[in-house]
Length: 354
Ligand SMILES: *Cc1c(COP(=O)(O)O)cnc(C)c1O
Image (cartoon, rainbow, N blue to C red; front, side):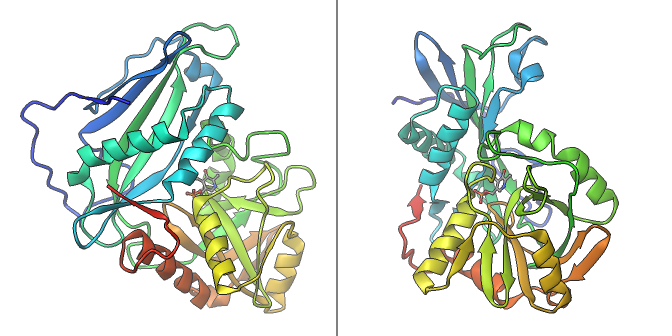
């Protein structure tokens, strides 16, 4: 695959003020683009200056939401090399998301090659400080024009990048979570396993309500019985009850997180048993009342580990671990970030150098 490169004329020197970094507010000066049509397939990969798109108002993605995305990070190591983490899993998930949304999937190797070539061009934008990263956002949108409802025949793949601060500036701060009782984000046969914008659009109403009421995110229950825990806004979630771990299975309704999978793999290697399957919210609240709910934590690429300090369900709340970060959450955070930043040798072969 040949990747064209249009160098920015008189490119400014990249100077990152790492004290002021936020999440997804500042963008690298380059982006990657590739087009799809029925004749040429995916073609014409290029790295060009980050620029606004010109779309017709009748562009299909705008009304019918045929689009998918990914989220991963580039990590700066002490020797100035750059790590990517389990990019094969992002490539595979991007492919599965594409198929679900009737988008022609990118070959997994193509995805990996594009990300690597792109990160190499924007390597100056990868922050230096431990915890800070260059957040990468690959995505595909439908680009046919017209109001007739059908799958688009043309698409655009893009990657943009944003130097971002560690999610929690003061370390791992526990968050408060509201358990949503009415709205659902997923059900069997729907798109829960795909990373697509629609999943987020339908979650915003509950998420906004939760934020206005002092909660950081919503915990979603299963779409059929409204009984079993599935995941948090943009994270998977684990519960430790009586010192045993639980998380929902990825059987179509839950997003198969790279962080979730890595936690399961670390637990397996350490001989820690995890119950992967159904866990009722009523059992969690009961365990909380009885002092048996040891730890709860969300996990995802952005936050890595996000401890939960309080859960509210049907007007009732439980405080978890005195609203403090649990030892296991800390241990996992250290285990994951040490590999990601190359602080320790990678025992699993999860990292790729750029
Ligand atoms: C991206 C995402 C996650 C976390 O996946 P990671 O690969 O660990 O970042 C969890 N849930 C949802 C809904 C997501 O979109």
